[in-house]
Amino acid sequence: MIKRILLNILFGCLGLVIALLLMEVFIRFAGVTGADGQFSFRGYPLEPYALNVEGLHRVVDSYVENESKATLIYDESAGWAHRPNSISQEGSFTVNAGGLRSQVDYDQYPRHDTLRIAAFGDSFVAGVGVNDDQVWVKRLEVELNRLGMRVETLNFGVGGYGMDQAYIRWQNLGRAYKPDLVLFAFQPENLDRNVNVFRPLYYRRVAVPFSKPRFVLHNDQLALLNVPTLPTAELKSVYSSFESHPLAAYEAHYESHEFVSQWWAASRLASFINALVKSHGGAKLDYGPGSERGELGKAIVDAFAESVKSGEAEFIVVHLPQREHLQNLLDGNVSPFSYLLNHINENYRYVDMVDHLGSQHTEGRFYDATHHYGTEINHLVALTLASEIAECVKNASCRLPRFTDTETLFFHRQE
Image (cartoon, rainbow, N blue to C red; front, side, top):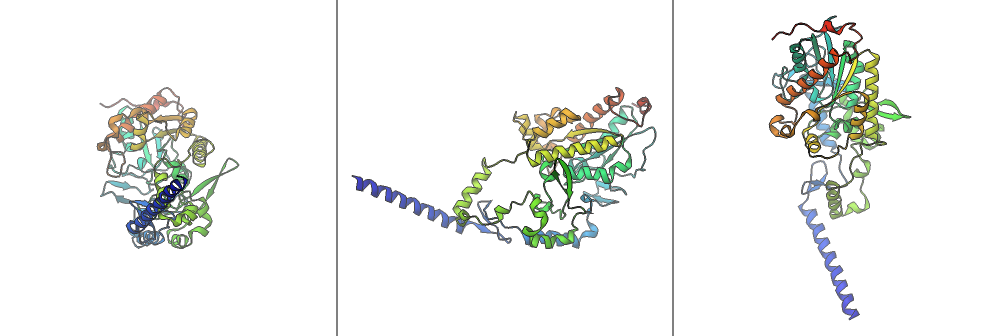
Protein backbone atom coordinates (compact mmCIF):
# COMPACT_ATOMS: atom_id res chain seq x y z
CA MET A 1 0.00 0.00 0.00
CA ILE A 2 2.75 2.42 0.94
CA LYS A 3 4.69 1.42 -2.16
CA ARG A 4 1.66 2.17 -4.34
CA ILE A 5 1.19 5.58 -2.74
CA LEU A 6 4.85 6.44 -3.28
CA LEU A 7 4.61 5.34 -6.92
CA ASN A 8 1.54 7.52 -7.42
CA ILE A 9 3.36 10.50 -5.90
CA LEU A 10 6.37 9.79 -8.08
CA PHE A 11 4.27 9.53 -11.25
CA GLY A 12 2.37 12.67 -10.25
CA CYS A 13 5.58 14.62 -9.77
CA LEU A 14 6.96 13.27 -13.02
CA GLY A 15 3.79 14.27 -14.84
CA LEU A 16 3.97 17.77 -13.36
CA VAL A 17 7.63 18.12 -14.40
CA ILE A 18 6.79 16.99 -17.93
CA ALA A 19 3.87 19.42 -18.13
CA LEU A 20 6.07 22.29 -16.94
CA LEU A 21 8.76 21.36 -19.43
CA LEU A 22 6.21 21.27 -22.26
CA MET A 23 4.91 24.69 -21.22
CA GLU A 24 8.49 26.01 -21.08
CA VAL A 25 9.17 24.70 -24.58
CA PHE A 26 5.88 26.08 -25.89
CA ILE A 27 6.56 29.59 -24.53
CA ARG A 28 10.07 29.58 -25.99
CA PHE A 29 8.79 28.61 -29.44
CA ALA A 30 5.61 30.70 -29.40
CA GLY A 31 7.26 33.82 -27.96
CA VAL A 32 8.71 36.61 -30.08
CA THR A 33 12.06 38.36 -29.78
CA GLY A 34 11.93 41.93 -31.05
CA ALA A 35 14.63 43.86 -32.87
CA ASP A 36 15.71 45.28 -29.52
CA GLY A 37 16.25 41.80 -28.08
CA GLN A 38 13.13 41.93 -25.91
CA PHE A 39 11.37 38.56 -25.58
CA SER A 40 7.57 38.66 -25.34
CA PHE A 41 4.82 36.06 -25.03
CA ARG A 42 1.14 36.78 -25.71
CA GLY A 43 1.83 40.51 -25.52
CA TYR A 44 3.70 40.35 -22.21
CA PRO A 45 7.36 41.44 -22.23
CA LEU A 46 9.28 39.00 -20.06
CA GLU A 47 12.19 39.72 -17.78
CA PRO A 48 15.02 40.33 -18.17
CA TYR A 49 13.88 43.39 -20.12
CA ALA A 50 15.95 44.74 -22.96
CA LEU A 51 16.56 48.48 -23.22
CA ASN A 52 15.65 49.33 -26.80
CA VAL A 53 18.90 51.14 -27.55
CA GLU A 54 18.45 50.86 -31.31
CA GLY A 55 14.94 52.27 -31.11
CA LEU A 56 16.05 55.11 -28.82
CA HIS A 57 18.82 55.95 -31.25
CA ARG A 58 16.29 56.07 -34.10
CA VAL A 59 14.16 58.57 -32.17
CA VAL A 60 17.18 60.85 -31.71
CA ASP A 61 18.32 60.49 -35.34
CA SER A 62 14.83 61.21 -36.66
CA TYR A 63 14.56 64.36 -34.58
CA VAL A 64 18.02 65.66 -35.50
CA GLU A 65 17.28 65.04 -39.18
CA ASN A 66 14.00 66.99 -39.00
CA GLU A 67 14.92 69.48 -36.29
CA SER A 68 14.35 72.52 -38.49
CA LYS A 69 10.70 71.52 -38.96
CA ALA A 70 9.99 70.37 -35.39
CA THR A 71 7.42 72.33 -33.38
CA LEU A 72 8.91 71.12 -30.09
CA ILE A 73 12.49 72.23 -29.55
CA TYR A 74 15.22 71.63 -26.99
CA ASP A 75 15.09 73.86 -23.93
CA GLU A 76 18.01 73.77 -21.50
CA SER A 77 15.90 74.64 -18.45
CA ALA A 78 12.66 72.69 -19.00
CA GLY A 79 13.82 70.00 -21.44
CA TRP A 80 11.64 71.10 -24.35
CA ALA A 81 9.29 73.91 -25.32
CA HIS A 82 7.21 75.16 -28.24
CA ARG A 83 9.08 76.62 -31.19
CA PRO A 84 8.27 80.36 -31.31
CA ASN A 85 6.27 81.52 -34.32
CA SER A 86 5.21 78.01 -35.33
CA ILE A 87 1.96 76.37 -36.36
CA SER A 88 1.04 72.71 -35.89
CA GLN A 89 -1.97 70.42 -35.55
CA GLU A 90 -2.82 70.98 -39.23
CA GLY A 91 -2.82 74.73 -38.80
CA SER A 92 -5.00 74.90 -35.69
CA PHE A 93 -2.28 75.20 -33.01
CA THR A 94 -0.53 78.57 -33.13
CA VAL A 95 2.54 79.51 -31.09
CA ASN A 96 3.45 83.18 -30.80
CA ALA A 97 6.86 84.86 -30.73
CA GLY A 98 7.20 84.22 -26.99
CA GLY A 99 6.57 80.48 -27.28
CA LEU A 100 3.00 80.63 -25.89
CA ARG A 101 -0.03 79.13 -27.56
CA SER A 102 -1.67 82.24 -28.96
CA GLN A 103 -2.42 83.99 -32.21
CA VAL A 104 -1.23 87.28 -30.70
CA ASP A 105 1.92 88.46 -28.94
CA TYR A 106 1.86 90.00 -25.47
CA ASP A 107 3.69 92.94 -23.95
CA GLN A 108 5.80 92.02 -20.96
CA TYR A 109 3.69 94.19 -18.68
CA PRO A 110 -0.12 93.98 -18.59
CA ARG A 111 -2.34 97.01 -19.13
CA HIS A 112 -3.21 98.91 -15.95
CA ASP A 113 -6.94 98.14 -16.25
CA THR A 114 -6.71 94.51 -17.35
CA LEU A 115 -6.41 91.39 -15.22
CA ARG A 116 -3.69 89.14 -16.59
CA ILE A 117 -4.14 85.41 -16.00
CA ALA A 118 -1.39 82.90 -16.81
CA ALA A 119 -2.00 79.13 -17.08
CA PHE A 120 0.69 76.46 -16.63
CA GLY A 121 0.63 72.72 -17.16
CA ASP A 122 0.84 70.02 -19.80
CA SER A 123 -1.09 69.18 -22.99
CA PHE A 124 -4.43 69.51 -21.18
CA VAL A 125 -3.52 73.17 -20.67
CA ALA A 126 -1.90 73.67 -24.06
CA GLY A 127 -5.10 72.29 -25.57
CA VAL A 128 -3.97 69.40 -27.76
CA GLY A 129 -6.83 68.24 -29.95
CA VAL A 130 -8.77 71.50 -30.22
CA ASN A 131 -8.40 74.72 -32.19
CA ASP A 132 -6.83 77.92 -30.87
CA ASP A 133 -10.20 79.47 -30.01
CA GLN A 134 -11.55 76.28 -28.38
CA VAL A 135 -8.87 75.58 -25.76
CA TRP A 136 -10.17 76.36 -22.26
CA VAL A 137 -7.49 78.97 -21.54
CA LYS A 138 -8.72 81.09 -24.44
CA ARG A 139 -12.38 80.34 -23.70
CA LEU A 140 -11.78 81.55 -20.13
CA GLU A 141 -10.84 84.98 -21.46
CA VAL A 142 -13.97 85.06 -23.61
CA GLU A 143 -16.22 84.04 -20.71
CA LEU A 144 -14.76 86.56 -18.26
CA ASN A 145 -15.08 89.31 -20.86
CA ARG A 146 -18.70 88.26 -21.33
CA LEU A 147 -19.20 88.60 -17.56
CA GLY A 148 -17.99 92.20 -17.81
CA MET A 149 -14.33 91.85 -16.82
CA ARG A 150 -11.26 93.22 -18.55
CA VAL A 151 -9.10 90.09 -18.76
CA GLU A 152 -6.41 88.51 -20.90
CA THR A 153 -5.26 84.91 -20.55
CA LEU A 154 -1.77 83.63 -21.40
CA ASN A 155 -1.29 79.94 -22.16
CA PHE A 156 2.08 78.56 -21.01
CA GLY A 157 1.04 74.90 -21.28
CA VAL A 158 3.37 72.48 -23.08
CA GLY A 159 2.59 68.90 -24.03
CA GLY A 160 4.30 66.19 -22.00
CA TYR A 161 5.24 68.44 -19.08
CA GLY A 162 5.41 67.22 -15.51
CA MET A 163 4.51 69.38 -12.54
CA ASP A 164 8.21 70.14 -12.21
CA GLN A 165 8.51 71.52 -15.74
CA ALA A 166 5.39 73.67 -15.32
CA TYR A 167 6.96 75.18 -12.19
CA ILE A 168 10.28 75.74 -13.98
CA ARG A 169 8.48 77.38 -16.92
CA TRP A 170 6.85 79.76 -14.46
CA GLN A 171 10.19 80.64 -12.91
CA ASN A 172 12.12 81.10 -16.15
CA LEU A 173 9.46 82.59 -18.40
CA GLY A 174 6.02 83.10 -16.91
CA ARG A 175 6.85 85.37 -13.99
CA ALA A 176 8.45 87.88 -16.39
CA TYR A 177 4.97 88.57 -17.82
CA LYS A 178 3.79 89.82 -14.41
CA PRO A 179 0.47 87.95 -14.22
CA ASP A 180 -2.05 88.85 -11.53
CA LEU A 181 -3.41 85.35 -11.23
CA VAL A 182 -1.65 82.04 -11.93
CA LEU A 183 -3.53 78.85 -12.75
CA PHE A 184 -1.60 75.63 -12.21
CA ALA A 185 -3.65 72.91 -13.90
CA PHE A 186 -2.56 69.30 -13.69
CA GLN A 187 -3.64 65.69 -13.78
CA PRO A 188 -2.32 63.45 -10.99
CA GLU A 189 -0.62 61.21 -13.55
CA ASN A 190 1.93 64.03 -13.67
CA LEU A 191 3.34 62.62 -10.43
CA ASP A 192 4.89 59.85 -12.52
CA ARG A 193 6.44 62.42 -14.85
CA ASN A 194 8.13 64.16 -11.93
CA VAL A 195 10.34 61.10 -11.35
CA ASN A 196 11.24 60.74 -15.04
CA VAL A 197 14.47 62.03 -16.58
CA PHE A 198 14.51 60.56 -20.10
CA ARG A 199 11.13 61.11 -21.72
CA PRO A 200 11.31 58.14 -24.18
CA LEU A 201 11.61 55.75 -21.21
CA TYR A 202 8.35 57.07 -19.75
CA TYR A 203 6.06 57.21 -22.78
CA ARG A 204 7.36 55.26 -25.75
CA ARG A 205 4.40 55.63 -28.11
CA VAL A 206 5.16 59.30 -28.79
CA ALA A 207 8.72 60.04 -29.85
CA VAL A 208 9.68 63.03 -27.69
CA PRO A 209 13.48 62.79 -27.93
CA PHE A 210 14.42 64.90 -24.92
CA SER A 211 15.58 64.59 -21.34
CA LYS A 212 14.00 66.67 -18.61
CA PRO A 213 15.03 68.25 -15.31
CA ARG A 214 14.42 66.19 -12.20
CA PHE A 215 13.80 67.41 -8.67
CA VAL A 216 14.88 65.32 -5.70
CA LEU A 217 14.29 65.97 -2.02
CA HIS A 218 17.28 66.51 0.27
CA ASN A 219 16.35 67.27 3.88
CA ASP A 220 12.85 68.19 2.68
CA GLN A 221 14.31 70.75 0.26
CA LEU A 222 14.02 70.59 -3.52
CA ALA A 223 17.28 70.07 -5.41
CA LEU A 224 17.40 70.09 -9.20
CA LEU A 225 19.26 67.60 -11.39
CA ASN A 226 19.99 67.58 -15.13
CA VAL A 227 20.13 71.35 -15.57
CA PRO A 228 21.04 72.38 -18.13
CA THR A 229 19.30 69.38 -19.64
CA LEU A 230 21.28 67.07 -21.89
CA PRO A 231 21.17 68.20 -25.54
CA THR A 232 19.36 65.78 -27.83
CA ALA A 233 22.47 64.83 -29.79
CA GLU A 234 24.18 63.60 -26.60
CA LEU A 235 21.42 61.16 -25.71
CA LYS A 236 22.63 58.41 -28.05
CA SER A 237 25.82 57.94 -26.07
CA VAL A 238 23.78 57.96 -22.83
CA TYR A 239 21.50 55.16 -24.04
CA SER A 240 24.44 53.09 -25.30
CA SER A 241 25.77 52.72 -21.75
CA PHE A 242 22.71 53.68 -19.77
CA GLU A 243 23.37 51.64 -16.63
CA SER A 244 26.62 53.50 -15.97
CA HIS A 245 25.22 57.01 -16.50
CA PRO A 246 24.86 59.05 -13.27
CA LEU A 247 21.26 60.02 -14.09
CA ALA A 248 20.16 56.40 -14.52
CA ALA A 249 19.82 56.09 -10.75
CA TYR A 250 17.18 58.87 -10.80
CA GLU A 251 15.13 57.43 -13.66
CA ALA A 252 12.13 55.86 -11.92
CA HIS A 253 10.95 54.29 -15.17
CA TYR A 254 14.09 52.20 -15.46
CA GLU A 255 14.30 49.52 -12.80
CA SER A 256 17.82 48.14 -13.20
CA HIS A 257 16.96 44.81 -11.59
CA GLU A 258 14.37 44.21 -14.31
CA PHE A 259 17.06 44.53 -16.96
CA VAL A 260 19.45 42.13 -15.25
CA SER A 261 18.76 38.42 -15.45
CA GLN A 262 17.52 36.97 -12.15
CA TRP A 263 18.14 33.30 -11.43
CA TRP A 264 14.50 32.44 -12.01
CA ALA A 265 14.39 34.38 -15.31
CA ALA A 266 16.32 31.53 -16.95
CA SER A 267 12.87 29.94 -17.18
CA ARG A 268 10.54 31.63 -19.68
CA LEU A 269 7.63 30.05 -17.83
CA ALA A 270 8.68 31.63 -14.55
CA SER A 271 9.12 35.00 -16.28
CA PHE A 272 5.63 34.70 -17.80
CA ILE A 273 4.08 33.92 -14.42
CA ASN A 274 5.91 36.94 -12.98
CA ALA A 275 4.51 39.15 -15.78
CA LEU A 276 0.96 37.90 -15.11
CA VAL A 277 1.27 38.62 -11.38
CA LYS A 278 2.52 42.16 -12.13
CA SER A 279 -0.38 42.89 -14.47
CA HIS A 280 -3.05 41.47 -12.17
CA GLY A 281 -2.80 42.86 -8.68
CA GLY A 282 0.95 43.14 -8.50
CA ALA A 283 2.73 45.84 -6.55
CA LYS A 284 1.01 49.22 -6.93
CA LEU A 285 2.82 52.52 -7.21
CA ASP A 286 2.74 54.51 -3.99
CA TYR A 287 1.60 58.13 -4.08
CA GLY A 288 0.90 58.46 -0.37
CA PRO A 289 2.74 60.10 2.53
CA GLY A 290 6.37 59.09 2.69
CA SER A 291 6.50 58.01 -0.96
CA GLU A 292 8.82 59.83 -3.35
CA ARG A 293 6.03 60.52 -5.82
CA GLY A 294 3.68 61.88 -3.17
CA GLU A 295 6.21 63.97 -1.26
CA LEU A 296 7.88 65.34 -4.38
CA GLY A 297 4.54 66.40 -5.89
CA LYS A 298 3.57 68.11 -2.64
CA ALA A 299 6.92 69.93 -2.43
CA ILE A 300 6.65 71.15 -6.04
CA VAL A 301 3.15 72.55 -5.51
CA ASP A 302 4.25 74.28 -2.30
CA ALA A 303 7.31 75.80 -3.99
CA PHE A 304 5.22 76.89 -6.97
CA ALA A 305 2.67 78.56 -4.69
CA GLU A 306 5.32 80.32 -2.63
CA SER A 307 7.06 81.65 -5.74
CA VAL A 308 3.80 82.94 -7.25
CA LYS A 309 2.69 84.63 -4.05
CA SER A 310 6.08 86.24 -3.53
CA GLY A 311 5.58 87.77 -6.96
CA GLU A 312 2.33 89.32 -5.69
CA ALA A 313 -0.03 87.13 -7.69
CA GLU A 314 -2.93 84.87 -6.73
CA PHE A 315 -2.37 81.10 -7.05
CA ILE A 316 -5.14 78.67 -8.04
CA VAL A 317 -4.70 74.93 -8.55
CA VAL A 318 -6.97 73.15 -11.03
CA HIS A 319 -7.41 69.38 -11.15
CA LEU A 320 -8.07 68.18 -14.71
CA PRO A 321 -8.78 64.44 -14.45
CA GLN A 322 -8.01 62.07 -17.26
CA ARG A 323 -10.93 60.04 -18.58
CA GLU A 324 -9.85 56.83 -16.81
CA HIS A 325 -9.28 58.60 -13.49
CA LEU A 326 -12.64 60.37 -13.76
CA GLN A 327 -14.41 57.06 -14.32
CA ASN A 328 -12.63 55.53 -11.35
CA LEU A 329 -13.70 58.35 -9.04
CA LEU A 330 -17.29 58.39 -10.29
CA ASP A 331 -17.44 54.68 -9.57
CA GLY A 332 -16.82 55.55 -5.92
CA ASN A 333 -13.21 54.37 -5.72
CA VAL A 334 -10.67 56.16 -3.56
CA SER A 335 -8.12 58.05 -5.60
CA PRO A 336 -4.53 56.76 -5.26
CA PHE A 337 -3.56 60.44 -5.45
CA SER A 338 -5.67 61.55 -2.48
CA TYR A 339 -2.63 62.52 -0.38
CA LEU A 340 -1.66 65.27 -2.80
CA LEU A 341 -5.21 66.32 -3.69
CA ASN A 342 -6.20 66.64 -0.03
CA HIS A 343 -3.08 68.71 0.69
CA ILE A 344 -3.92 71.10 -2.14
CA ASN A 345 -7.56 71.34 -1.10
CA GLU A 346 -6.60 72.17 2.48
CA ASN A 347 -3.95 74.77 1.67
CA TYR A 348 -4.76 76.53 -1.60
CA ARG A 349 -7.58 77.91 -3.67
CA TYR A 350 -8.58 74.78 -5.53
CA VAL A 351 -10.93 73.89 -8.37
CA ASP A 352 -11.52 70.16 -8.83
CA MET A 353 -13.16 69.49 -12.19
CA VAL A 354 -14.27 66.08 -10.90
CA ASP A 355 -16.97 68.03 -9.04
CA HIS A 356 -18.22 69.55 -12.30
CA LEU A 357 -18.05 66.55 -14.65
CA GLY A 358 -20.68 63.83 -14.80
CA SER A 359 -20.78 60.20 -15.87
CA GLN A 360 -21.61 61.27 -19.42
CA HIS A 361 -18.20 62.93 -19.62
CA THR A 362 -16.50 59.53 -19.52
CA GLU A 363 -17.91 58.79 -22.98
CA GLY A 364 -15.47 58.79 -25.88
CA ARG A 365 -17.33 61.53 -27.77
CA PHE A 366 -16.01 64.10 -25.29
CA TYR A 367 -12.35 63.32 -26.11
CA ASP A 368 -10.13 63.48 -29.16
CA ALA A 369 -8.23 60.54 -30.65
CA THR A 370 -5.33 61.08 -28.20
CA HIS A 371 -7.70 61.08 -25.16
CA HIS A 372 -7.46 64.83 -24.60
CA TYR A 373 -10.51 66.95 -23.80
CA GLY A 374 -12.70 67.82 -26.73
CA THR A 375 -14.45 71.14 -27.33
CA GLU A 376 -17.30 70.58 -24.84
CA ILE A 377 -15.14 69.76 -21.83
CA ASN A 378 -12.77 72.61 -22.67
CA HIS A 379 -15.78 74.92 -22.63
CA LEU A 380 -17.01 73.49 -19.32
CA VAL A 381 -13.58 74.04 -17.72
CA ALA A 382 -13.64 77.65 -18.93
CA LEU A 383 -17.15 78.26 -17.56
CA THR A 384 -16.25 76.74 -14.19
CA LEU A 385 -13.09 78.79 -13.80
CA ALA A 386 -14.76 81.97 -15.04
CA SER A 387 -17.38 81.68 -12.31
CA GLU A 388 -14.73 81.00 -9.64
CA ILE A 389 -12.50 83.88 -10.71
CA ALA A 390 -15.28 86.43 -11.19
CA GLU A 391 -16.61 85.65 -7.72
CA CYS A 392 -13.23 85.91 -5.99
CA VAL A 393 -12.54 89.23 -7.70
CA LYS A 394 -15.95 90.63 -6.74
CA ASN A 395 -15.70 89.62 -3.10
CA ALA A 396 -11.98 90.52 -2.92
CA SER A 397 -10.98 87.05 -1.71
CA CYS A 398 -8.39 86.84 -4.49
CA ARG A 399 -5.16 88.62 -3.64
CA LEU A 400 -4.57 91.15 -6.43
CA PRO A 401 -2.08 93.76 -5.14
CA ARG A 402 -1.87 95.60 -8.47
CA PHE A 403 -5.48 96.77 -8.10
CA THR A 404 -6.45 99.00 -5.19
CA ASP A 405 -10.04 98.88 -6.43
CA THR A 406 -11.02 95.72 -8.30
CA GLU A 407 -14.20 97.44 -9.52
CA THR A 408 -12.01 99.05 -12.17
CA LEU A 409 -11.70 95.59 -13.76
CA PHE A 410 -15.40 95.57 -14.59
CA PHE A 411 -17.21 97.37 -17.37
CA HIS A 412 -20.85 97.31 -18.43
CA ARG A 413 -21.50 93.90 -19.92
CA GLN A 414 -22.23 93.88 -23.62
CA GLU A 415 -25.08 91.47 -24.35
